[in-house]
Image 1 (tube, rainbow, N blue to C red):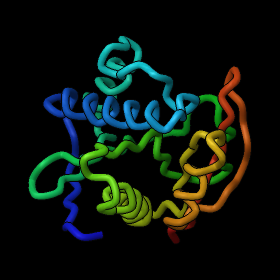
Image 2: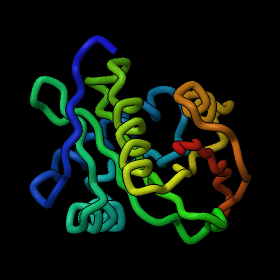
Image 3: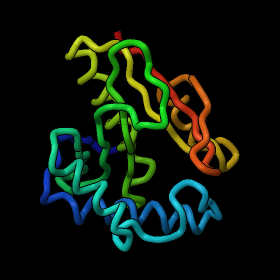
Length: 170
């Protein structure tokens, strides 16, 4: 990491910048030929994606990473998604993670995940989980392994292959 990353709670005022982060990530994925993860359309043009970001901005689960005072990434923390098997123990779940491509390689995603682990530990919760796209040659799964997560279970939603990843924090 070459720049300091500061994490703060997000809110309704962050909706446009978070949608822009997703849009930059989708554009990059499309350029890489990896449309299986989030499709090929900007989130800012999809009502269901706007609703998803708005719901998290309205609650207490949105975390914004800033680099030099500018929003660089976002994580949404909460309960597991309905298609994921329960952990069988208390957990904190990273529902999504996105980094603006302008800040790629600066450790923004890693900082958000470490912050989530710290929040879980502070709450006495020993397990941090997330799910990710299992296609694309496993590149995303490899990233999560590189920041301390281990593969757990597989799942499929329609034709979207997913993998639950977990990290012990206590």
